Image (cartoon, rainbow, N blue to C red; front, side, top):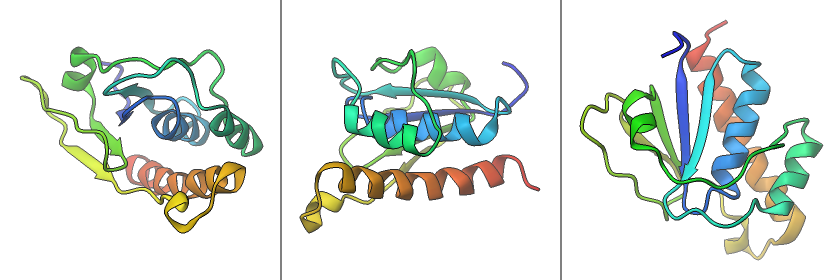
Length: 139
């Protein structure tokens, strides 16, 4: 452990929402938080629209790739946050964090797609990440 708080973001493919949350928290925290992301069924690549709208906000995912959940990381993370209702994470022995779910906005349910959808998803996740950052590092 590094002594700084650690957060693991999880979604199904680890190509969009969890990568987005991780990139936004890394961007906001500036190294003050150990940030990880993973997928319950990792895909092959990052969602390029997600990468594009992250870059618009100044957050980067350079070098990131979809990856599975590491049970050791589950054990040592202070916070485990599942993005969306589709992914399900089982607790592992020795885990101290609770698993919380962020029921993220899904603009496609309102007929909004493409980059407009992804910007709305980003903004919803960013608001949650800002609140989490404030909770981890009160001003």
